[in-house]
Image (spheres, rainbow, N blue to C red):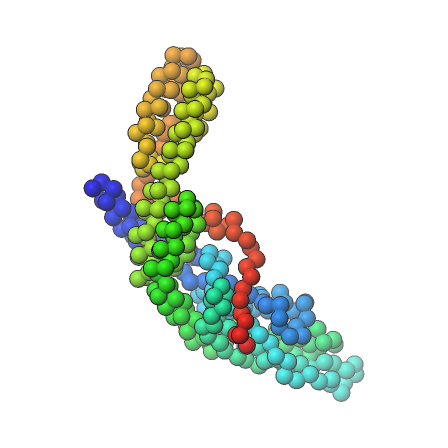
Length: 317
């Protein structure tokens, strides 16, 4: 009964926590788009690649979908067609380009396109590369026409999460059975708050997975601590054990045994060294601390993922 009440409090606390922080920049609570410039853009100078990437990032930022992209599944990308290529009758002669730039939003993992929009820009330069870059500079990042494009993409992303929600949760539960708890929690946290129906379900699913994780870690750490203490009951051994025990979460199922071992060692240290043992066990976490633990796990796991993702945009143009 206590565990059920705790789970309910955690869920309520998570929703309260999220609401209280709604105005803050929180990439885990929002839908974000990762800017991606594919290699297969025809005749695009390498020097223009970073400029296009920056332009794409500015477009999503100005439309409320920028950020570090905690979940980099969804992307904004572009294709460029060279419409005209002329040499001006000037001295010196200049290269004049007209580019058609088509922007796309979609699922870069599944390779599903959600939305697209096109614009035309012109540029002039002393070389072909400078003309290309000059044209890209004229790509307006604050074009009001992007709003409906971005909104369509956002709607499709929400639909993706709501339609795939049961699969996301099932996949996380499967990862948990394989002791891949960090990955499971990361996948559940990747569902943004704006996808409310799925978001609420995923928040409900995190607590039992986190409990499995701390239960397993408790048993492993307690075993290590008992082995160290059984081998050598000295102050140095007590300090080694203290570092282990003080890292165990109090919500773990074996925490009663942790407290018993801690009390035993504390008494022994007092006998050996005539002073109190410095190591203290963790106290029961508040709801906000439990939520922070979830988030810390998700962020740490995400930060350790490959920075370069191989996106699939085949058939988008």
